Length: 189
Image 1 (cartoon, one colour):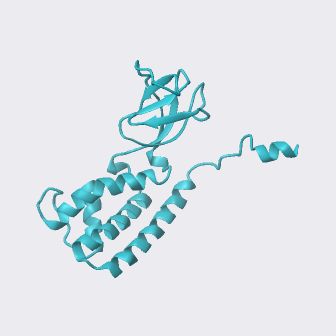
Image 2 (spheres, rainbow, N blue to C red):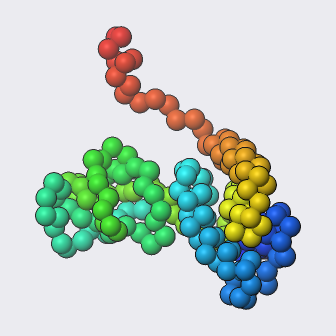
């Protein structure tokens, strides 16, 4: 089964013993809970970690409007933006002082390369993230659908364990970053 919001919600419903749904708009209690909770939970889980499958870099377009104070330039954030990881200029995507307000990034630099977490399509979710998301969805769906708080607590503990495992797997997908210009090492000579 291809990953979709519907498939992920149906898996979570099955984990709590509820009936899977055929559509998020079908009018059942299960569909209503899934339709209302899924988008926020998905975005929260994506924002919680710099997932390799949901992290990218982009050169931001500069806006004509000048910020009122503190910074010289404003840049438009990309569509699907969830969380900034770093911003830079001149071939480096880190090192800039910046501030994000509303859907704009403010800085003094003339150009900005932003490293950020975005909202990918569900079909791009790797198995480890999908499992963590389903576990979290099941925990969140449990109380509104079953009113069983002790079961919900168990599901939340399982969801946290799944999330830790998913973060660990995802963190092993790149070389560890070397410490650059660490002041405590510099003073030691």
